[in-house]
Image (tube, rainbow, N blue to C red; front, side):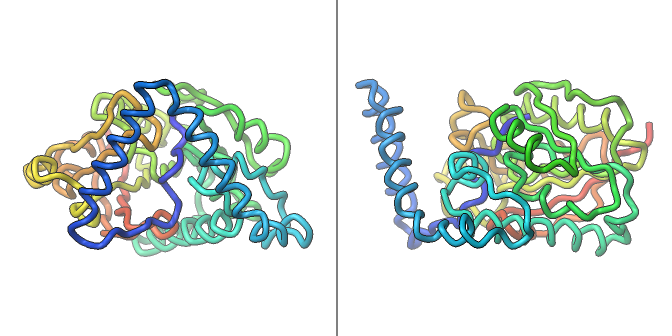
Length: 294
């Protein structure tokens, strides 16, 4: 399963209405130009170096005084992979918000997280959310297709079990193993064939009546879409940008509630849909599904 790179968690810079399309076009043209002259990778490296330095002062207190939960702070390059920023403060804040949104959505539907036996963070990165389950009386797992954050988690977040996987299924787990799988800002970067494949894999690894919690780009993002893309969205079809970059933030996926209900959730029962309910993943919708019995 892919790491949810770059934009998935960072505070979204909202562009004044009417300028978002211009901004998107300019950025797209700049990427195209840099790619054509072979400088895209170098430009991104320079940009990341500047941003890393900008966060030095903000990150220093966590290095010298410790983290809010007392667990190790990941290296900023792994924070960048997981959250889209070099900010440790945002990683801890967004992780706490995301963990709270999971607990709240479950409780709203009569499920106590503490009652679940096995939980999987699908696309866990460097443990932004997993670290909040350190005292949970459950078997906690995390997986990601990027081995770098997984190697760090294995060494430093020893209360949980971590594994790597590919961009395509399967996961390295037995069938019917988990009571809950959550995937925050993951399906937001998966084109339809890949999303369908992973939904089938979610069915496989979940126990009968097991729960799947995912987040999606919904109506909150309509202003960022072109007229043609909005038309597809309102036709309850999947809108996909840059499918060749599947699994990274450069591939953006947008869908309506009806698309989730009628297409994506095949094999599941829709338990709840909370517009913009994914706290810690700004503006994303939160979707709670239950594996249908065969």
